[in-house]
Length: 185
Image (tube, rainbow, N blue to C red; front, side, top):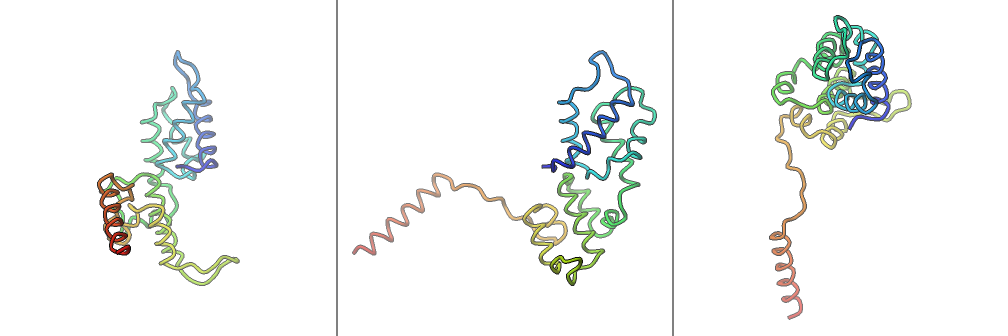
């Protein structure tokens, strides 16, 4: 889920896009349409992708308010060339795996986070923050994005926890009755 501040930034960017383009018979895009579009874009891009420059790139050649797919494609093209260098460093060891697995924006964000920490280095405390370590960073990523963790470490993703089935519950109950029966004897 995208954080509220990022959604606010993306929704503002979409509002500016609506101001700069013409609208069909249905009129200006509704707040709901802009909110849904912002949420979907927030799944694929960080809020830092929504700048005046990216707005210019999307508006260029668009007389009418574009559909979601066109907005997404134009932002992706712009972001490919303009995202921060630390995020582009991901292109090194993880790019092929990240592309092959079709990661969501959130998982890709965690890969970018790890790449940034890797470039900055893990080490002593800075600016009053506790020391960072590769293992702490990997633990955080494992908890937040098993898919990104799997790409970084090469480990197979752990299966998600699920509630026990009725058969499993019955088997455990039977085992407990058996143990309690032996203890009583």
